[in-house]
Image (cartoon, one colour):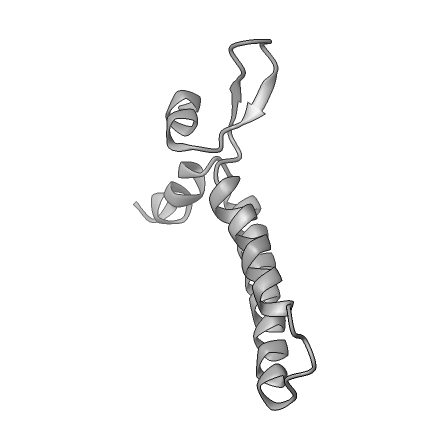
Length: 93
């Protein structure tokens, strides 16, 4: 029961517990640093003009577009590809 609490969600996106922890720590650190840049931008509007929007775009690409680390096979050429949408993610299961 306890083990499942730590592994169920990471497994649902094709990651081990430690892979998921590393990704989450990376996302969190980037958000904290970008948040500080946004606070400074509020005081000094000429600083970090695009930092917040670039971070959001980057994190969206990493989290939503490339959500699942499990590989599925490309039916046309048989090469492995990352699952990037719901249909691909379910095919990888």
